Length: 225
Image 1 (cartoon, rainbow, N blue to C red):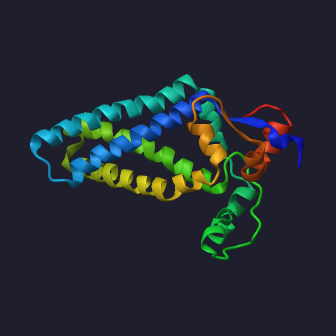
Image 2: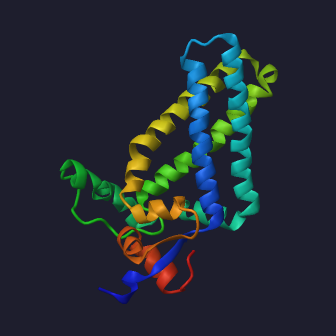
Image 3: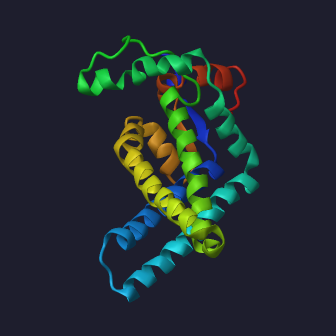
């Protein structure tokens, strides 16, 4: 074993941790309040109160995203650049989906070996881009439905409404069924993003999940990118 196995590597900076935590909390609060209003038969007073909460949470959700962009533009740019940089190994990750079907469901999909990945693997890049796109879409449609309803007309209102409702439920299902379970497979990463304090991970976790990132951005430069 290398002496580096006892080392800790800074993976998540404070802006990353704050945005991720606040975004997750606000997301589920919005889903719960919105789903109750949409799916449950509520009296007018209760429905109005929940919608007031939903709108307030939506405003906070909007400021969460723009706060990350404006107060930590370097971290936001780094995340987007990492997600949008696709090389051969990123594409090859999808041949066996990181080995997860074989590991958990005993489905011999693709080759046994998983090609070395960078800061994010192929699945993470695809899902994070989808998550960011959904955040933008839900913010835009939410504000259009709330503030600009008279200007967009009935037909567009109905279209935006269903995009807003079912888009949020679809992404939530994806997060609950895939993102959270897979995140828990690397407890070092999970604790790094959620714990109070330094957002570091173990050398072993970085070597296993992101060897290319470890070699290029940590070992060669000694700086966490």
